[in-house]
Image 1 (cartoon, rainbow, N blue to C red):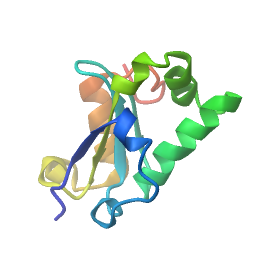
Image 2: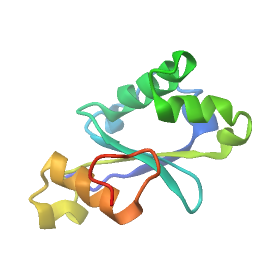
Image 3: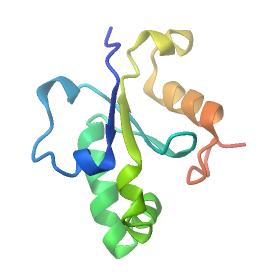
Length: 118
């Protein structure tokens, strides 16, 4: 079981040159500010996927990445939250990655998630 959760400001995330070893197993990620989650996603390597969104925002390939850059510099106060689908909070969905992502989307109703979002 991996109950680790990492919450880091976007400002600090951008300074990381490599993924910290203990973050490599984290497979869910959220873009958020204090009270609003903008996007929930999943990837077997969430750290790298967050970077793909940020870099894809420059060319419009990622809506959430574009949102970050269009709201610069205020977006530096946004947060990146990395979680594991194997944590205790997802025991109720069998620690399944897809089900854990769905649970987070249903809980937070992020504005950039179209699928699974009521």
